[in-house]
Image (cartoon, rainbow, N blue to C red; front, side):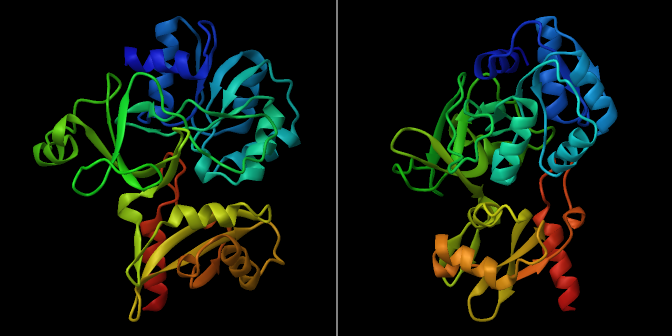
Length: 327
């Protein structure tokens, strides 16, 4: 936890007297890691019981916040609440998390409101902010790329299924070691032997390393769709769909197919009800290979997306929904 506190100061330029508001569940690293790091520095931690717009705005008016945590699934509600009751923010040094899961136009809107850059993060409960949380998205920017920079206090490598390092530009599972990494899962010897093989913690997340050393998130390894012998990563399709400002959320899942084995299907929430399946298919065809394009689009309300406590869409529940509808 001391090493993780050092990373907050190093990566996000958090000052000794910057405060923190812990509104996410206290069992989640979004609150515990930075809450403890703030206390270790001697800063103030304000606790709000869940996402409540009025108490959050009150804290933002009273305290200068080092990192204001925002997670997918609640950012648009925060923007709406902020606009309904404009607040004079005392100061926010950085905001946000998991930029890959947020529509680019929403990133621009919330950073402009708070006058704070967005944290282009990639970490986990097991690793803290590392391996790749050094990059910030500028205020008001609609990012064309969400490439990440490797964090301090860690070593990383990208490996194939045989744990050989992959070449630059090729997808590989990220393995990490360093002082912020946890010591293992409780009473799970078999899992620990697998995930810590070779002295590295294997995260189960696939990245590509670019020529300049930056890292592009591809997807969770277990979410890969095998269609007609080709590998399709849902996150790549989701980023294309969410690049359209008429879309507020998108999640791609796999469904069985007698011809191709599996095919991608996209769940989409619309800000503009006039956008059609044909529009979305044209958007995908413009930026993706044909085999990566969803075979079907299903429109649902933003509130219908099942989410974890960290705001991530739970794809397995959407897959189960499709199976129930098919039955």
